[in-house]
Length: 377
Image (cartoon, rainbow, N blue to C red):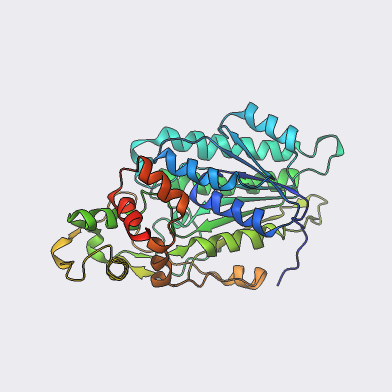
């Protein structure tokens, strides 16, 4: 197992996309667990989903005196340059990105701006953090995605696999991030690690994720569409496991070293963070239904069979995601382990008081969230 070569205590950490699902959970864990840390967060607060959810996450983080929030877009180079000049972060965790496979088909511009231009700005800022013999950024950690594996047939997916067959623009931008990071690691000796996330879920997650959409429809008595006739399999990974993995990776940057030619060997790595246990979509919705009944959100006599609709695969989707997490376990002594049932069980009971209050005041459009309020109260 690798030894820590970065101490987070007393350091300034930049988290981009801090109002997002993963970003807010990561920032909170750092602020809670690491003494004398300063977390600077940036987010453009776009309306891809209800902004009030992002505002509540930020409200939760604002109780920490060592948290600084900047409303801005990483695609705006001047904003990023100013942020780096003022706060001089030691570790950068780039989670800001336009997410979603299907949305990339109808809104490609958002992906080019955030995922490509935005990431380029982060890389450039990291590069120039070394100007004038400054210490600069000691470690860049950035979000990639299991989507990069595209139409690969071999499972489990290994970071050693060739990933040149993306089936969505979103996947192509994430693969591009890995290539860009590699180039900057080689040219400017920037230690960087890319993390390929596998279907992240948990309380107060993104409303466009399947578990929210399915529950919404089940509560309304509507049919749910089960794509690929129920044959899709996903490596569902609970948010706490994702955050734990990120924090561990943050504390060991790839070592800088030169090759025989005297030039830097890129201090660059990529890891999968997944549960290493793919579940079929049909099993997923069955467990979800059972847990909703257990929590009292659905009645015990709910006719689940009457609300299932089997449909073909959607453009941009892939049939299976399955993470080989051996390198993560070998290097960092960590493997995600939360079962799907245990993870889904946290959804109703894990809804926070701050969200409940906000929903009572005006509420989100999701009837699922409204039902969670009733359950939690």
